[in-house]
Image (cartoon, rainbow, N blue to C red):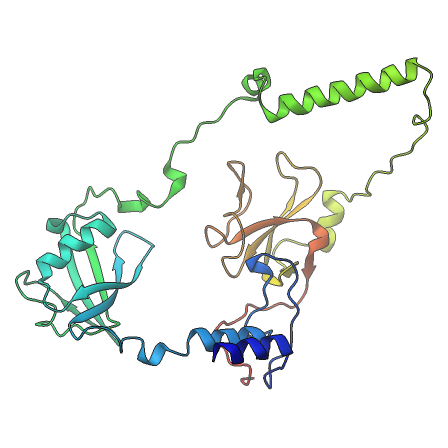
Length: 307
């Protein structure tokens, strides 16, 4: 089956209703989606082909469960348990994942379809509660002073960061700025020496500067609030910022992406420029890489045969 998928990808054969799409660049965000490429659809089919019998080769008492936490965004997929484990023993194991001590845990079994069961008796086993593969255990942290509360273990913005003043940074001799300054001074001295020696062969060279637009000119054609597509990669989103960015030359466009395919949350070098859905949902790009137009948000679960 793997060879067949490789053959389909290499031959360029297409699936009806799915156009071929060429990958631009080498980053993950540059890859076409399953809606744009027959090759990606074939890869998805290969990866998910065994989902129907993924629990077939495990021991009869083995359980694979998803685990979520009331204070954490992260979740744990397919954690392994045994059906003979008591609720108390399960809490001890989950302490090493979420950091919540057993005495501050309330466990809830989510069986699907909105059916949730409170695992109140710590002496009963998972088998007693009818736990099956693929169900979800939810940890409720009852400690009001928990370290994980309010993003304490995940929100890096709460971590105090060291910021050095420009005056202090300029005094360092081993910094990037100092190295560049010495290189610039060396190049200027060499140029002056060549001129003093009568070598003027390079003095009439004209270095053309790249034409640039003002912020007003860019804002006139790329307005804040416009739907857009960012190249390369065809990432879609909404223009959220047009202007200058500290530490970078020229005009930049801040885009709030529909999917987490960016590299920030609308901030750069500790300064916040625009709001977006969260981390990885923001990016700064040059105006030439932004295409404004009718680019609705893509539904990753939509069928290509639906209209």
